[in-house]
Amino acid sequence: MENLEDLKIQTLKAIDNATDSKILDEVRVSVLGKKGAITELMKSLASFSVEEKKEMGKKLNILKTEIENALETKKEALATAELNAKLEAERIDVTLPIRPENQGRIHPVSKIYEEVVSIFGEMGFEVAEGPDIEDQFHNFNALNMPANHPARQMQDTFYVPNPESADFDDSYVVRTHTSPVQIRTMENKKPPIRIIAPGRTYRSDYDATHTPMFHQVEGLVIDKNITMAHLKGCLYDFVKAFFELDDIPVRYRPSYFPFTEPSAEMDIGCKKSKTELKIGAGTDWLEILGCGMVHPNVLRAGGIDPDEYQGFAFGVGIDRLAMLKYGIPDLRTFFESDVRWLKHYGFLPLDESSMTGGLSNNGGAAR
Ligand code: DAH
Image (tube, rainbow, N blue to C red):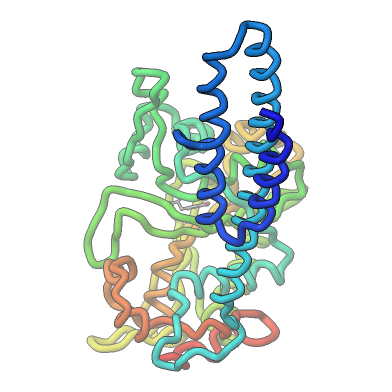
């Protein structure tokens, strides 16, 4: 047993010299494997006296631990070196131009999203967000739609069970509109508030102009002395910028939404023929969005005193805007992930929308 020190020196040297994990494992087996040197020595202890067993056992255990640690350290070093070598071998130059036929496209919904954000961003609006899975308080109650309110039936809601409660009023919903972000914003922010909230919304509906998942953008402005004139000016500027027209006829029709009073729908002037829709001129009207002055109950639910502050809000369908602006006839095709469709209606990745560089100037360049 006097060669324990030799065994240690030899093994540590072999570990050090191992150039890959396979060789390292062979070293491990030769020492710690079933027939390894240390294993054999451990077995031979059986024939020793109790005293010797104690002493040698201790020495062997220390040696074993030392070798195990050296093996582990080397294993990690080899793994890192092997990974680095692999990464180096697989290095790709992401700045190389791609083949034009393989170029990806920006989806029209993303394009419109960017356009809307740049228009309202220029007016000083911030982008706000809320969760897709909402509680009924934010999706309905706080928006002046208490349980059993008839307006709840206007929205074909998908309910999501609450694992903690069997009570239907506690169940969640996938938000039916972006309006709950109004409440979430008021809960977290003091006026003045000027936000837009673009995002996904869900309703049980399916035809050429409805899909179960669709997109809306919500707008909310709250400050002192806000009037309907601000609403009209803001939305007029929006539609002009969005449709890239110097002027566009608009009208507001009285409407009903529980969360606004008064409520209105905004129409824009257009010319409809059997084959074409031309926006900005003509004697026809096209409904474009819902809007109104924020209902005092909604301000209260958001913790804002309606005697001190007023506001206006609006909600627009992003997909509908995309259909109108880029002449896409069927909404269902938006979400079918057909690359031929995307190639036809999509936009080149570097066609960024901005108020200074142009919204859709290059729009359609991909087509
Ligand atoms: N949440 C409404 C819907 O989905 C849209 C809407 C209308 C939003 C009027 C508003 C508004 O903020 O003031 O049908």
